[in-house]
Length: 420
DNA sequence: TGACGTCAAGATCCG
DNA sequence: CGGATCTTGACGTCA
Image (cartoon, rainbow, N blue to C red; front, side, top):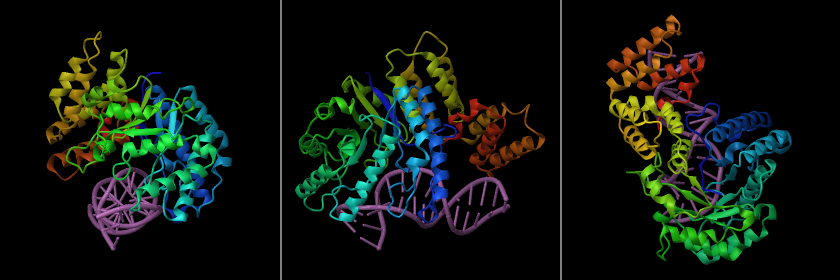
């Protein structure tokens, strides 16, 4: 099994995959049923997108069933969506896709407060039931942080272990633990993992921000972590992210730098799944998959180019030309040069003249089919944008609406419409 | 008591 | 009314 690469919870620029929720006071049975139905349909579209793009790793959002583990909310999602959940799971399994879930920083199994622990167990129960309802095997994990330290880390670790032992075996089969960026470094997590037979997820950025006192290379921590993964657990998983330039330490970058990733990847064990934590989600997942492909097909880069081209054009017509000619040689696979140029382009701010030019290119899809009023609206927005009384966003919104109305799928999946 | 992180919902403002 | 922009919510720990 070669490396699988995936993304967390959400997509960028994939139609019909938006997750919805509500606030607690509106969370009645009817509202929750509607939201859950909508979210499962969104998940279905996410799976379709992943299959098409050969993404075989996906973290499902904890909010897929809103307030599912909230003590005040009672909602029989398992019964209501039994069949739909089963068929979603079947779709994922048929595609060889590995799913996971990751309760947030507020699920704390080792809290000093009994009620917090009780709710953490309820939350883990929900996550476990969700993966069970999909029919997924024990290689589909629930990732958890160890929790707080409370001024006595030894006691806190002991509490984690005691509470872990009390968990239902169905949860224990899925639970894995991860090093965090403040309290539990990788060596401490490994110690717990080895003690209790819990697989350990190594997170490279957390480790960089909050390293172990024992200094080891990333590859060594990854090798040590791999020993905590047993046959039933599936291949080892790690979390990979990059520091956002100019943001506080530990902030995830907007996109994965392809250069940094291809330097990082070769040190990984042959069977290792990599969950990316990055703002542009699936966009980076596809990038990293194509950058590490054993056999590269230029058609894949052409498909990528179709999504990026207008976002590049509005920032750098020069790079637009450079990428177009880079892809001319159909016997080549210039994946690193390609993404390098993409990253350089997306990293620059668009100037009004260039943005206007790109908008006109996009308008080209509609100029012969749009109504008179749609045409007037476009021209007026363009003029207003030129003189500063309308935003580029409003101009793009109009073009996006037209893409929806006239079913321009080529444009609907374009990153031109998303700020990534 | 507020920062931390995350996202969409909800609220408000504008024309 | 639609659209854009600002604020809130949901959670627990720690300074």
